[in-house]
Length: 292
Image 1: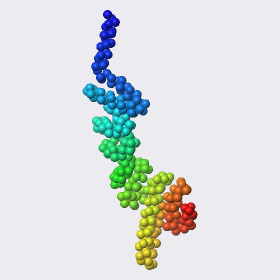
Image 2 (image 1 turned 90 degrees about the horizontal axis):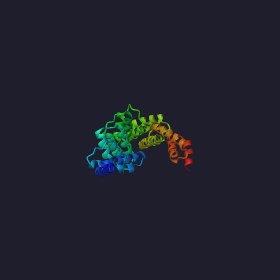
Image 3 (image 1 turned 90 degrees about the vertical axis):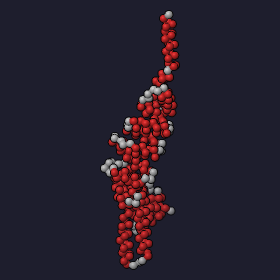
């Protein structure tokens, strides 16, 4: 009789378990958590999705922690549409700067520039480090998308913050695109002075200063050739002294670049032209030999 009661109890428990789909949830979650911890995000995504669908179908509450892990798994498996819905739901309910950063980094990794920029623009972060990251990415993303006026505005609004050299470089290029050459020249010189081995800035600066100077040089020469006399020649010499300053800046940058890459033909060619404009014919001849 006792054995019969035990058997009936077991049968009843099994029957109740089979009739209660929610009883499966702990096992599904355990499997999902294990896959998530191991970095198997495809498996984690499948199991968390199964968990959420089963819970929602049976009017059971799903914790934010589960939704957060499903969001992360969606992001890691390039399911950006689902990730967007999940992260928006979580962030709108309770903004968490770490969660925001996680989502932003996933979008950056996936090359979703416009989505990442929209994310940073939507939320006002509170954590100082995340705030710094927000500004740097807003500048970088606007630069990549060609929003130069926005780059200038963002950078100048944050002028008291400590910004990366890459952020300042993006600002310099945006200034140049916005026809603010005077400011672009000053900021680029300060940037390179603070980072003398910053190759990208040196290369950009060398070309920028050279092209500014060369354009002005050709303009002044064309103006003089239209009316040659002692007076216009005096004006020409005066104006070319101003142009020479930019040629000297370009020369200095390309000399530094050539120290880094002695065989780079582009640097040698620019140096030859700078030397010619600065009337350093011997050095120009040396560069010419290297180009042959």
